[in-house]
Image (cartoon, rainbow, N blue to C red; front, side):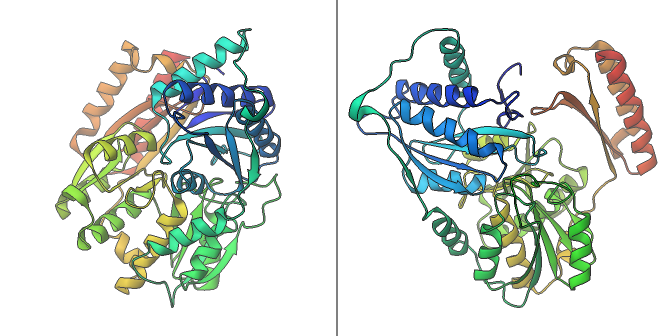
Length: 452
């Protein structure tokens, strides 16, 4: 797998790349690293462990729980809940560590492990590096220092997690959703129970699709990566809007009443103006990544909202927000972080806030999202290339320079290695879609030539 930790935890094919032995070993390593860092000092440590509905999550959860307990950590098992729920509960329960088993939007055969520090924040890069190093050291033979007797961790189920998280979501809503009909696509994932319950308690009339997880159907033709079903359902039921989550519900995309996609950039734009109106947009600033559509940047400039851009990955958005005290940030993919109420992207919270804005203003989602115009954007994933050489290839740099010269000020180019998959992403924006496609195609060929 190369370096185990990517931009969003450890991820791979369950029982091939991500085995029970790896899950157990990483959990023991995490416990030891956090203990050495002083996180457990003066008290008996506790961890919150949750998962999405993937079949492989059942044995991986058992491995993680066993590893933590063997290292002297008490474990609260919260079962199938969204990633942001595990992050929230880690903070709300005063736990020292949170662990989520999910591969997010990936297909069912994959799975992943995400660690959260005390307070529900993702671990810093240096801690992940240390966990990986300690894991490797002991995997090759160095014995663990293991507690015995009463020193071993105890395991219990925390069934109150569901209601505690839903109550939190409802408690931070600025207004109710009465009178709105909303279609929810749960991706047969971790929010299949949480999201319908939250929207119903908030007063919305809901229609659900993709809400029958069986362990095998997560993200299968539904959810935020497959919006066609949601678009059709919104139009068919005459709904005001539709909300789509991914497998672990840390992201949200939307559909307006006419079945048009509303992406993460547009959602950010709507929420930024709502929060500014409420006096909650600290420093009059929103944080986004370099993958955000140029139309989002232009819209924020027109509205007098400052934009800070980071590397791709919600962890980098969050780091910038925490460092400077910003309240709102996110990604085009639908990871939206509302830092006053969540420590990570929260798809259910984002969907609720978006619907609340529709309800409060009486305006349609299409009208609200019209604050920005998306420039045509073409994204090509180039597989089977050496993604580590993207920033050092002179041939590729020359191709990018030529593309930027052609596009001028009306477009832009971005090449980046994926943090979670073995490929390079080529993104081109231009005022004209055909020009964007042509430039992206040439750059994809250049990537294959230079890095293949």
